[in-house]
Amino acid sequence: MKIAIVCYPTFGGSGVVATELGKALSRSKGHEVHFITYSHPVRLDELGAHLRFHEVDVPQYVLFRYQPYELALSSKLVEVVQKHQIDLLHVHYAIPHAYAAYMARKMLEDMGITLPIVTTLHGTDITLVGKNQLYKPAVTFSINHSDAVTAVSKSLKADTIKLFDIKQDIQVIPNFIDIQKHLASNIQCNRSLIEPDLNKKIITHISNFRPLKRVVDVLKVFQKIKEQLPSKLLMVGHGPERKKAYQYCKNRNLLNDVMFLGESSEIQKILCASDLFLLPSESESFGLAALEAMLHKVPVVSTNIGGLPEVNRHNYSGLTYPLGDIQAMAEGAIKILSNPQVHSKFQKQAFENAKRFDVNGVIRAYEKVYEKAVMKVRQST
Image (tube, rainbow, N blue to C red; front, side, top):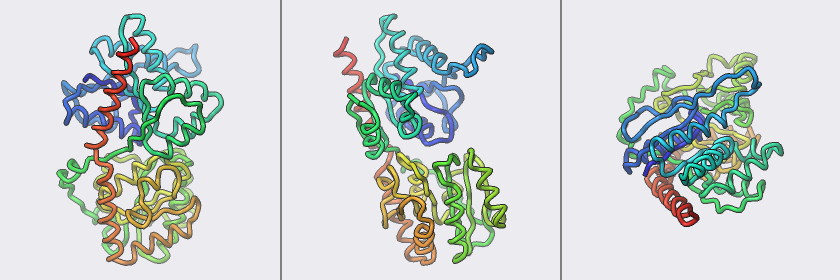
């Protein structure tokens, strides 16, 4: 099957998942996958006859205060579908991607081409942008005019149904990791490069530093851990709250204990050296960063918000707590870190939990969705 994937090309979870899915579909199933987005996806580290990238060029016009990306994307979709005889379009995010996909389909229909559309909801398109009254009609329309819709967690599916007048069935297909690729990677893990003092515990947080990630809560939890255990915190990522987090550390003399690493392509090396992962978010449709931590045998202390309890099993792969309960998160983290036997148990259980989300099962689920969408379109024409 020839599949076109539309996603954001950034370090964010939806872009990572979409890119890894396309790579897996191409590598293990032989599908021809075409990525269509405004820049090269950060995780797209391989290209070939069955894996291609098409850049959406957005012309700059002084007439427009905001450049019309949806228009440029729709036009590019039409071009790629025609040129490469695409069988199916898989878009990640309801807006703007599903909206642009629908416009492309209507243009293609005038050319005698039918194009099945599968839309995957990731969270921000529903829980933040989508519930804005300005966008609600467009989000509802885009979802209801897709041929198949998936959501990355039960929580996100429930939020979508609650917030919008949805006529479509929504299938839950979780985010995933590649167990075999990880086991074959033979990562050289050198903790001393991060922290020469091997007695110190290494605690990690990875996110896009948006307000909903509660990065100051990460720092507050770390402070309490540090009072009890020698430790270092790695803050990985970049975003609007980064400056605020840095200033918090500066004001409290924490800069010697906290490393701001920015957006990194060395996530595996960082996680393999980590003892604990913190994710105190106020909103998470899934929690891909937590899952990637578990893959590296890193226990997770998180909130019990959104899809996080579906990923981080309380008292098994880590611990979950109510939003803002800094004291409880710190006490839970100390409980895990201060006892080597307890820490080792949580490490093993974190990895076992990660196995539930192996890519092979997810690929099969998506292939069934693709087949269903194609059949639906064929029966309607």
